[in-house]
Image (tube, rainbow, N blue to C red; front, side):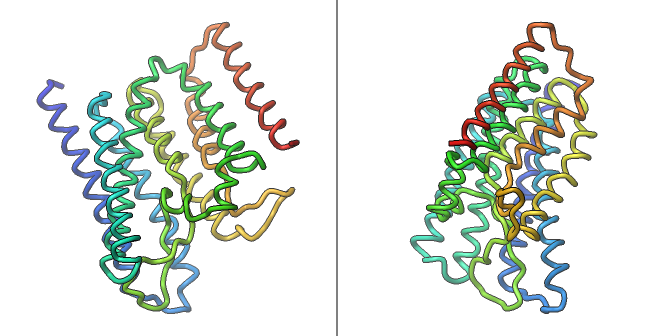
Amino acid sequence: MNLETAQSRDAKRLAMFVIVLAMLATLRVALSLVPVPLSVLPIASVLTTAFFVFVPIVALFRVAGNHWTAKSAAWLLAGGVAAHVGFYLIARFVLMDRGLGAAVSHAFAQTGLLIWCLGLGGLLATLIKEKNMMLPVAIFLAAFDIFLVLTPQGPTRQIMEQAPQVFESVAYNVPQVQVEATHAPVAAMAYIGPADFLFLGMFFIALYRYQMRVKPTFYWMVPTLIAYLLTVVVFGHLRIGGVSLAALPALVPIGGCVMLVNLREFDLSKDEKLSTALVALLAIGFIVWSVTR
């Protein structure tokens, strides 16, 4: 494939990514205008949850096949942050979260969020210099997310308990189906931290770069994350062993899918195996220490 053809392909994929996000934004606004009958609310909620998880993952998967450079990723990061912050401030402090204008602004803010997550994910992917690095990175991220979300010392858990509005302002939200038209931003049914999307993008980009098992990883990732979020939505009021199901570390299934599906792709030297095992032991030890404080 020559350079001109590759650039054209990349431009089309990126344009399609933006178009898909615009469609999601339009649907978010539509949910505030078109109520559903109370009788179909449960099934509509499940379908909405699956849709708003499935579509962004598909969009990230498709655009991850582009040729990524630090420069192209940085431009997306800057533009996404500007859109996310700008539209959020307009909706929150100019329109006071009231009316159709606020609903539109919040929808565009969510679009900006996914764009900067892709940009930052692409930037991080350029730092992965060889495919064997992905194994310890996946282990570390999964363990670190457990620390952030589930342990008493975790900053994410503390923010969600003490200042949930801070987390909600930077998180991707799955909109709640309405039984009455609101003409205003719809309430969120669930939240997904931006780290989940940015590292998902990072892994997809790295998998494409090193020609690993990208499609099988995608096929396992989608149903796993949808089931994970539905667990939060449906069983969020329950606790198992002291752990609330209202907030679960999504980097665990993300890292798990990447590792398990691509296990045969890794060819670690003896030193790399030892260092990976050390990372795993340190991560487990850190979680145990945090839980017991």
